[in-house]
Image 1 (cartoon, helix red, strand yellow):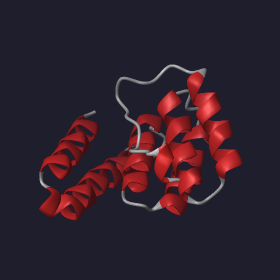
Image 2 (image 1 turned 60 degrees about the vertical axis):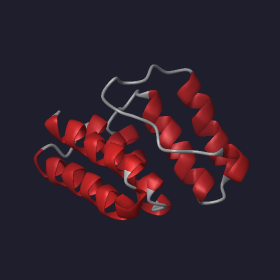
Image 3 (image 1 turned 180 degrees about the vertical axis):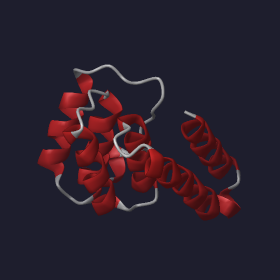
Image 4 (image 1 turned 30 degrees about the vertical axis):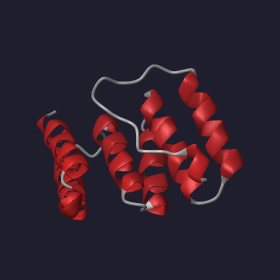
Length: 122
C-alpha cells in the first residue's frame, strides 16, 4: 500500500505547512486516484480517497466514492465514518448519524483513516 503511505505523508505535510495545504491535499488525492487506476476495487484506497475528498470539502464526490467502497463490501469503520462526515457536510444530519452509528459497531482498518470532523461546527 505504497500509495496509502504516500498519500498520508502528503496529508501530514498539509497539517504542518498551512501555506501549501491545498497543494499537499491535491497531491494526496492524485496519488490515490493514480493507484486506483490499477486497483479499482481496493476498498482501502477508496476509503482513503473519501477521507481526502471530505477534508477538501468535496462532499458530493466523497459520498459517491465511499458508497462505492460499501458496495464493494468494505467493513471498515472508517468507510462509514467518512461517509457520515460527507453527509454532514451536505447538511443531511440523519443520514450522517446513521453512518456514524454503523461505524461504531465495526473495526477500523489499520490502513485507512478518518476525515477531519468538528461536530460543533455543524
